[in-house]
Image (tube, rainbow, N blue to C red; front, side):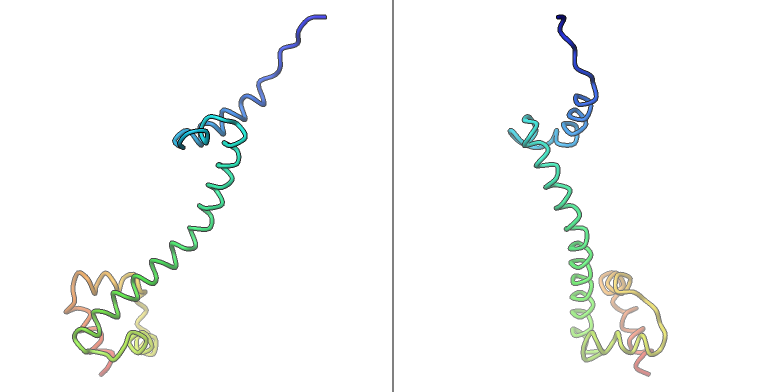
Length: 117
């Protein structure tokens, strides 16, 4: 009986996984079993850290706004400023407020003074 050559589908699947893990170190980019395990692990970490990144940036923006506000003593605290912003229906999100706080502090002081009045 003649030898049967295997198809290309499994090889194509493995090479696709190899391309994903080609930048990993050691056996994590060479051995098929560890490649599949590391791919799953990498995708799980990426999915988890997308939500974590959003939380971390929000914390950073809040810390920046709070630091600038307390520095000048314009408002007592960050939450007082945000509450007054919503009462006056000035819908500036925290990202924009943090950029204003870093790049142009006087503008943030003017906004907070207008809200207080």
